[in-house]
Length: 395
Image (cartoon, rainbow, N blue to C red; front, top):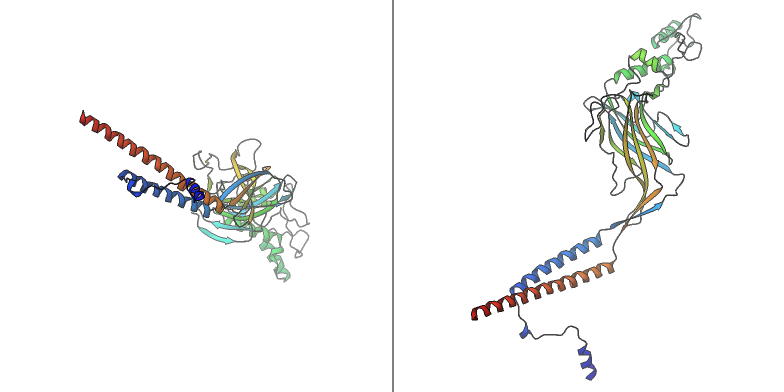
């Protein structure tokens, strides 16, 4: 019995007879408010426990020899698809011109309505200088005399058009079954395509896979002509060094999408016409070089299940070089990218059950203690004021 009595002395929660309880209206209001606060904080902790938090870590990027995937969707409202090509180059010397695979071109009218969508790449068939009868290409200091491909009647006969080749074949009694191999027919077909698309725009979307080194990719009008600028000027009456490169970047990303990623150029509109505004870049000229300087930040995102997404983020600055300056820049839209030496790692993590239990205890104990202090302050303050009022009445 003596041991039990000593144990009772250790009770930190002594019980008070109910006859000594004095319940107040202020105490009941404080109890209701504190209960609501406790419930709200407890539910918030449950939410934080169920939903993962993302931790960020920075490390030095030492990866090598990887492939970078560039996803893009760009609209040129004033450039036809036939005049547009996509090229890439990097500091290692690797270059690719007039890339066609994994790219879709969509012809659009001046109102932005789709005319034709075709997954045959960007750009037109590469057109060389006209092929001469002797087998060489037309030089600037000689007159054109096209080959009749064996149907010549005399050594002086020239076939300067596809129709003349057909006529020469008819005279021989031959059938022209392979016009795609005839230089004149190929050239006229391409020219007809350019004339057909005059006044149209073009949407280009797809992806590129390049080496993971600093470099650039660009949309350059007229590059697929390969030195035939003067030839095209004579036949089409167009100026191959003067293009309206107004464009809208609907989508540009480096690598796979991951939760929370922000691509700063998505929806960016550049309209090179009159002046500069807060939403669009507008210039007085219709031709020049639009440059985007991009810093790519390698990123790894690990979700709550441990699945890793290797991707990239990027920052960008823009610059426009007017075509009227010297030296005259080649017209086009250029994306010059470089890589940050720092890699960002995002990791989704859930709080432990012990962390939830500890926070729940802290919420209950903390709110209960603070509510008790407030109740004591209100109760004793009310009693003190009441006593002073009674003393005032007696005096």
